[in-house]
Image (cartoon, rainbow, N blue to C red; front, side, top):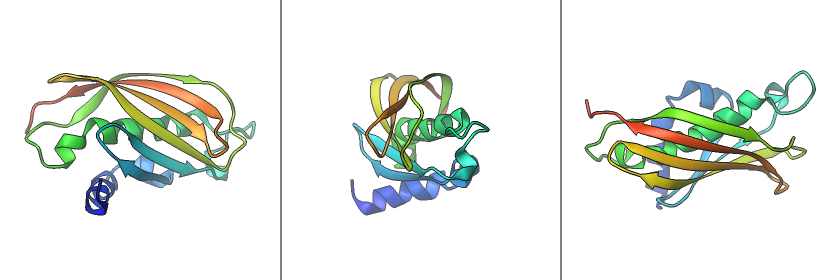
Length: 140
């Protein structure tokens, strides 16, 4: 991946205002792996002091969105891939300062795709696992 490709993805997904407001950064983009991360701040914490499940899901969801839309953002004549269903399992609470989501593609057809997104913290602790099923819409 060259830096221009990364900047193209960062520019496109800057319009995802929820993820941007959460402080999520696209760190790397490749065919086999997409990585996004988020510094944990007070706004990400729930009433018990742990990282809010919605914040973790938002990080995983953006990694899924970036990975499932590689071709579209790069200019291919395909529609946008949207989440059809997602399943997330929360494994542990983070004691780290940053969360990292790593997306790998499990399957991809003409209109259906499946991705596994693993979320860990900067201490290497597994925090959550998400499976995202994507549906590629018709090109407008």
